[in-house]
Length: 331
Image: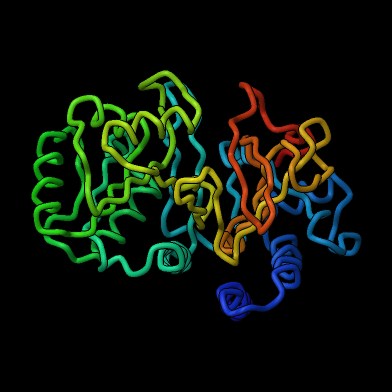
């Protein structure tokens, strides 16, 4: 456990500077030693700590394996399990959690970096698909942020769109700064039924139609929401069940990540080849806050890196598993 605490300290010390690459390499070596699934995957690729010397060569575990394997880097039993929602009939991902403290530390510090203190806002969460089931990491995060906000009008809204509309009007009349966090399909429904000119309000979408609406690109979604609520920009949150950290966009389509999270882009046809800025490929994520599971994940999202560490999310691979899953050794 002392190794855990030492690495945790170094991970979040990156906010004040330090070498991301050095910490990432130490986390890689630690997870190779302590994560059976990840070690088998690295061995199958022939990329072990004795061979890998730069983070670009670290193996990125296909995110699909979170659906079929218990991916942990801690001894003993998990304290909590986060599960993905997905669409009807799909197999959910499972993120086995050894310690919720590191998750809370990651999303709270990340939020403060981009938006300041939660207490500066009344936080309203429109997350119906997530509230209707157990194990949502997004609901857990939103709940902690709402509690940290401490505003009496903050909270979750399931199907109470009219109540949400009246709450927003009341908060605007008071000049209260508001953060409206919502899943895409629910924000679209709210925009159709209760369009209004929102003031002192940040609208942040978390993505996901979850089979409720037709899929649309982010730019189209934001145009509809901007028009309905008379906003110049719509903010976005980029996170997932398999991660403990989030990236944010303030409306220009470019996301920024906290210092303990970094994205690399892999060649769509060669998953072991990392490509540079300006080219579209698969998104690989290093989330050092995932110390207790796996910090190196090959997602099914397509994206592009931009100068300054910013990135763009352009879509998803079409109905296909990330290449490399067949290298997994069962057991």
